Structure formats: structure tokens, C-alpha cells
Figure 1 (cartoon, rainbow, N blue to C red):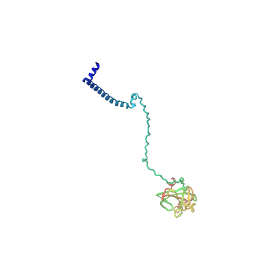
Figure 2: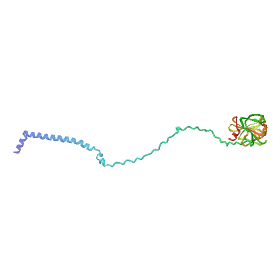
Figure 3: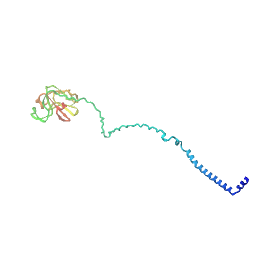
Figure 4: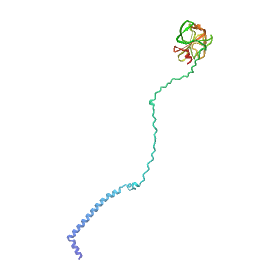
Amino acid sequence: MANKKWDAFMGSAGFYVTLAVCLLVVGVSGYFLLFDSKDAEPAAEETSQVPETESAAPAEDLEEPEAPAVVETISPDPVETQTSSMPEIEIDDTPVTAEAPRTVVSPLDGQVVTAFSVDQLVYSETLGDWRTHDGVDISASAGTAVLAACAGTVAGIEDDPLMGTTVTISHAGGYQTVYASLQEHPSVEIGDSVSAGQTIGAVGDTAAAEAAQGPHLHFSVTKDGDVVDPDDFLNQ
């Protein structure tokens, strides 16, 4: 009896409606299942691509590394050079020759009878007139030794008509000393090198222009040809 009812239901229109509804439900369910599965796959892929560092502990749980100590370096102040303001110094390469100390001595110890005078006229007892006197007259006994006042070279020996036997010595610095009214035959010759204090002759009375003064030495000095005061030369 039941089989007859089932067969009658399978052959009726209601069966087909029910079958269509079931198929529709199954299709819709399958569609949503398929859609949900596609949406879930990218999420799974994104989850799998998260780097491991994102799963690390939170930032506040990490200890911050200590900053290295800063050592302050003090640079020395630059030294200012002033070479640009220094004047250039010329170097003199001329060889230096050591020279002995200059020694000057009095050519004769005696009394001065006529002083040096080129600015004022003095009276000459021998000539009986007034004239200048380019040296100093020193009185002494005849034959008293006359000395070279300074080291030098004998430049001249002559028998002057007015000043008698005369010896001239050249010295450094352009100086010349003249020794007149000497005895004949001095003890030096032209070209001889003499030292200060060396005997060059003797006191005489050969100067005709000063004969009234007796035996004496007429001593005069020039520098570069100009007459100078003998005292200045002897006391320099």
C-alpha cells in the first residue's frame, strides 16, 4: 500500500517541484561555500607571509642599547705664524779676519812748546810771523828715542828743507803720522812694518823752520789727507 503511494508521489508534479527546490538549495549552498573558500585563501597566504619579526615581543618589552660614551677631544689653538711680516735679512758671507786691538802710544815724553792750531794763527819765533801750526812740538834732549805712535808701515823718509829729517808712517783707517826734526839716519827704512812703541829715530834739531825751539819733535797726524789734532789720535 505504501509502495503504491510512493509510486504515485514520484509520478506527480509535486515530486518534481520538491526535487527542483532541493537542487536549488544545494546549488546555492555550494556557491557560498566556494566563495568563502576563495576569500579565505588570500587571508591564509597573508598570514603565512608575515615576517617572524612581527611575532616578536612588543617594543616596550625590549631593552634599549646604551649609547656609547662620547669623548670630547680638545684641539689645540692654531699657532699664528708671522713670517709674512718678518723682514728679510741679507746674509753677509764676507770672511771676517781677526784684528789685534789697536794700540796707540805717545811718540815722546816731553814738554809741549807749540800746540796744534789750525783755526788760529800762532807766532813763529824762528820765522818772525804768524801762521797756523799743523802739529805739536814736543821738546826733549837731543838723541831721545822717538817711538811709532801706532802699528803701521813706513811710507816715507825724507830730508825736508823746512822740517828736517822726516819719517811718515801709514796706519789703518786712513791715518798717517809724521815725525819731523829728527836726527839724520832714522832707524827704519821705507816699507818697514813697525809696531806701536817701536823706536823709529831720535830727537834732533834739523827743522830749519823751527830752529829757535832747539831740539824737539814735530809730530803731526792726517786722516785721508786732512790734518787732525794729534791729541785726538793719541786719545782715541
